[in-house]
Length: 308
Image (cartoon, rainbow, N blue to C red):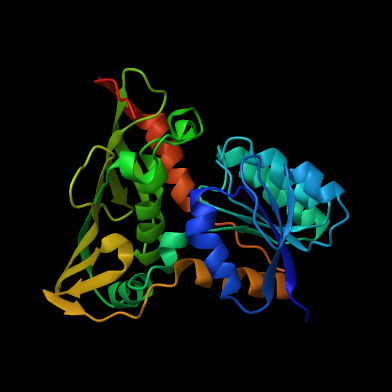
C-alpha cells in the first residue's frame, strides 16, 4: 500500500509542536499539503483554507484537522464529502451532536473518521489499565492544574462557547480515566468557575460515581503557576496506583516504574494508518460526554475577571 497523502488544516502551535514531527516519523503516511490562514510550510502545497485545498486538484487521501473545535464541523464535513479520511484533534468537536453527525456521514461515504485522544497514548496509561483490571478500586482522584498563560497564550477561542475553557486540558485527564477504569462512571455534581469577563470556565470541581457507588473526583484549574500538576491517583485494595506528568509516569504502591519514552502523537498517526488500511473508524466520545454533563449539571460560580 502506498503512503497516505495527508493534508493538515490549521498550522498553529499544536500542529507544529506535535503533528509535523509525528507524521514525519510514521511509516505509511506523508504530508502533502497545508491549509492555514496565517502560516505556510516549505516543501508542501499551501492553501488559505480547506475549501481551496480540496478544490486545488492536489492528490490527497486524508485530512488532519488541527483547528479550534468551533467551525471544525464544516471542515470535516467538506473533507468527508470529498471522499477523504479525517483525523480530529481533541476535542473532536464543539458539541456531541455534530460529531455523531460526522460519524454517520463518514460511514455513509465509506471513509475513516478518527476522534483522537492523545493523552491515552501517554506511556503509563496502558500499564495502569492492565494493572487496575486485576485490582479492586476504592476511589479515584484527579488533580489537573496548569497555567493557561503558558500553554494557550493569546488564544481567544478557548474562552468562547465551544472552546471548553479549562476542559480543554481537563478532557485529557478524562480521556485517561475513561481508558484505565474497568467500569464506567457518571457525573453526580459539578461546580464551574467562570471569570466575570469570559464565556468558558477557568476552573472546575467534579464528582462522579461508578454504578457500584465508588467515588471519582476531579479538580481542574487554569490558574496554577510554577510547577504544573497532571496527576491521577487510584486507591486500590493493594495500594495506590498513581499516574503523574500527564500519564507519562507511573508509581505503584509507592514504587516508581520505568516506562518507555512517550510517543503520543506518533502512536495516533500509526493508529490512523491502521484504521484507514482496515476501512474502520474510531470515535469514542466518552470524555466529551463527561464534559457535556459537567456543563449540564454545573453550578455556575463567577470569579474575578481574567486577562491574558
